[in-house]
Length: 473
Image (tube, rainbow, N blue to C red):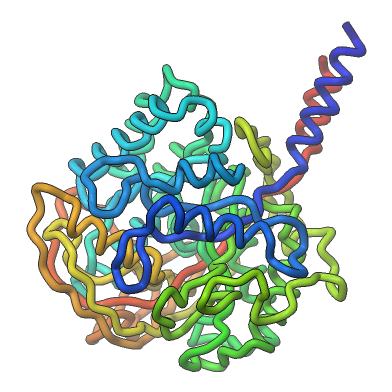
């Protein structure tokens, strides 16, 4: 009996120390064409074969569970993941209203029925929404951007998903939400923290244009965002759902896109995370077929396992995460488990801003408006992958009419501690006055507006709590 307990302990420790390591994947190409099973499979295989990579990148974060161009058909990335043994962080789009979240849930249930445990054993977790809380921040509301979803709505969606999968083989999947770190340090969003099993953070020092964001300071900015998030979420596991540095494109503040700087960011931020913290890098390839500005892809076009810069971590210390406080990590494949340990250190004050790039997308009325943006210090703007989701919903949501949302602009916001910034002016991000905390509203009117840009970061690690629990057996 005791030996069986030791075997179980060993298995638990092995699972707890195996962090997910992968990339973000959109449902369409940059020209709007829907990705099919063969396309996803080619991408997943390419990620697993990257030359010089530290370990195998065999996990995929998706922004939607719905196949592009359909109402609620399961995304073909699922079959591709089964074919390639790629784990999945499923995403449900949550800023389009009840009808779309219902379709997202139906797509998941259909996938469970269609693929069974071949599918569910690969699920790392489920993200209900992506940067929706930012969109109701003072800056987002003031500039009449995409209305997003308020904390009560996101918490309600999390409950709907949990109830829907309760009697299925997906019932053990941890459910969370992805947002900018400024959303997590905003106390008005506590309901989402309470509802979530894990916290996903998007962090991009490249876009912190009101701070000293040259490449030499990017590691410090990332670490600060991560530390403040951990301090704010009460010991919930924190996962890095998006981070990266562009290889080409416009200069943002003091941050200059280049292969050399992207390599530095990979070494100083990525390498300490890989294998230790659940991390989905942004991104393996975004130049498919067109190259965005800025471009974060570590491979160009066509798809190749030869990266644009050296991915080895031989000259860096990848044994520890970028923060001293520990958190939980989920299993690498199969059913997920996460064990929380408390994070320490109080939130420090922060200021920040973001530059918005220009984008035009066709969206349903329920999505009309700008993109996610900046809060109290760090930009959380919309990635090209998220834009592809909006474009997809424009064509696949049966009861929504399409409008055009054209977004441009630059600016900055500032704030202190856990407050979010207000702002005024035109464009995606605007110069703001510090201090106001948003009052969530559940009846936001969608309007066409301004916005576009890029993202933020997060973490999860450690098995000490698992070990302590096992010793009590």
